[in-house]
Length: 393
Image 1 (tube, rainbow, N blue to C red):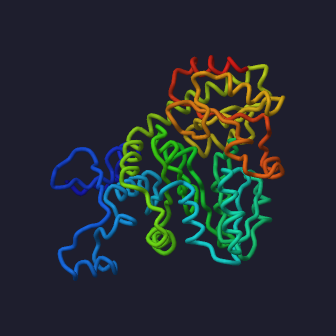
Image 2 (tube, rainbow, N blue to C red):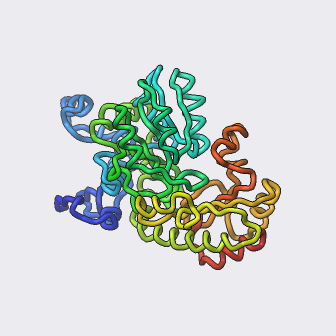
Image 3 (cartoon, rainbow, N blue to C red):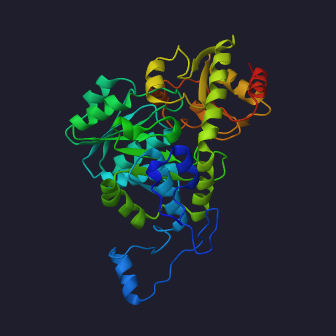
């Protein structure tokens, strides 16, 4: 196979072809290397590989050709130097914490993150002496006020879950670097198709590959992308020791998902934008959260920072949980599930699912009301999605 510099190619081409090292069998599609271990030509070669003096596979907990292909492809698409894949998105966040933090360190995190991310920082890293302050995603002064001399990094999702708020990545990157901190961005909602955090100054990007990268709700995985220095010193050693590995089969699924990511994201965005505008016209809907709408507080920022507005729409009903549940239960086609990024449209009630383990005070601080409903807009015909929602509206 020719030695190609994939940096010379577009994201769409990278997503289809990069990372595949064709074997002697001359296969056209990426194979699954379903093996736990690898055979060495000699005892000396085994020793050299284990010490890192000679490149090559050692054990599939931390070296596997199918997983390597996924890592290389996603790093290229994100315009990052190196990627490490994990068993889930939460495993990726755990790896970041375990790799970068120690007792006595401090983290600043946005309030509008996935509920389990909040619990990870509060309940688990906190148990080992790491302090976390949670701030309003869009309030730069709150971020700056929360930074301490022992702050190790700033962590955020943009767009946020589930209110689809937008953070100014470039501004927060500048702020972090002024205080010798890293900026870590969860790019799950946008993917590299819609947003490039590294171009805006971020130091690390996190993914739940379970969502849009797969795109069809088939398996679970996560990824961390950063500089080769950060990965080699802090993230890869944790994977090698901790073992939260992505399986070769899941990596193969994600590679297939990446091939269609660009066309899927455009279709998700187009339908979500149309649905958001339609929801604004419905009498039962009190407020719609979607950055493509001019009513969204960060509409102009989203236009500058993203190439499109994303596939997630959330909206509020005045009468709280009772009416939100009735609306959800009235749908026939739409899937009632907390997953997102699927070709199938999904609907959930964040206050009792994705963020249900947070205290009521924490949900209130994050702006997650009992009447809030979140929709991940799939690829069905948009009128079918509207008509299904009308059954409850």
